[in-house]
Length: 322
Image (cartoon, rainbow, N blue to C red; front, side, top):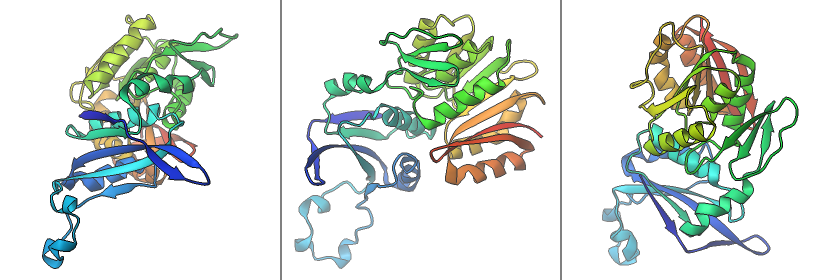
């Protein structure tokens, strides 16, 4: 997956000149619909560039812009726009993580309007300590004095998904505080920055295993695990969903899957061997409109929904074997 940074600015006029960022992803044309569905989870006002359906036989060549005639018809792109002063760190990490999970290995991500040096550092000014229940997520570069009863989780997400600010992550962190018990074993599928495994370990889980398909996420997660002093509780490695996951006798007590609806549906038929009758599977990353589809899939494979939580158009589920 390639990431390019363009130094041009995208400008709009809503009473005054505004600087905008264009978040653009390009993929082979045959995967355009799949990409559109994925990006609509972030923003529904999408710009789609697809020149493959232009029928040159019905057009007068002299009237077609030469750039269109010579354009690459084998690739298409989807874009959306945000004001330049909006924090896009979670959007970018979400895109990278979800594209990797969906095997978009040849996708190209562009941030048009922001130079690479600015991107590397400017997003950090928007990432401040925040609280989810008794857990406080604190950026690694911020100072924070813990109050009574608070559990501090220090994070540097780098370019991996998982600052904790996204609704999907907040939902599952809240559920972890309800279901994790002292000494539990935990499996985190699609770990991103490692935030959920770290939260689980801080809540008392002892045997935690985290996996991600993206090697960069695995590197970032291992760095956060090491900086948190949790190497004795958490191991992190690369896996395509459950394919390379190390199972344990009796399954895991808690399984986290903060992914997307389609990937959770794809994982569902394979997850039972990693569970026992006491296991709680926490599934998040589900846009509200797709929640019923995920519920239906779980129920068809013999699972029951024990809790459903929603936040700002996103859904998370607590699931057990029926």
